[in-house]
Length: 160
Image 1 (cartoon, helix red, strand yellow):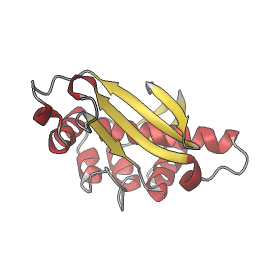
Image 2 (cartoon, one colour):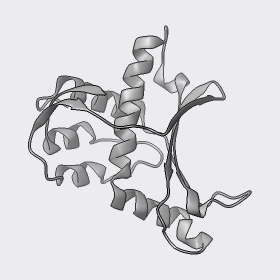
Image 3 (tube, rainbow, N blue to C red):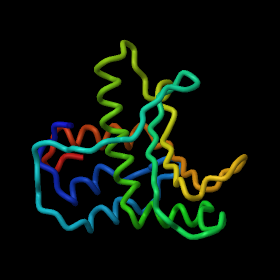
């Protein structure tokens, strides 16, 4: 659970505007602005499948069992990008990242996002191949984006 101020699609879009980082779509703010929910606050609830530490950095991993097709080509980067967009998974991992960022900042003395956060992995299980990259989506949101989103969630309102 993550305490949240009063949130709206427009406020989320403003928090998500600007450079996103590797794997984060440039038009994400526009997509989020079109979400159909009323202003809401209280608690955000969600569960990342795994947070792990590797190479001295923390990473988020989410397993996906989506069936994108029968061949490895169906799990190539372009197909994964489409599945990530269709499933709303970009916003999902950004919310997970903002929550992890707040948690690590509160728990680790001297925490620094650039040094401590390694990135996000979405593993589409049906497409993973031995010794290959198929079926694995990676992203590493920029610090500024994560801090804007975490701040907006905490404060709510229309601040971004």
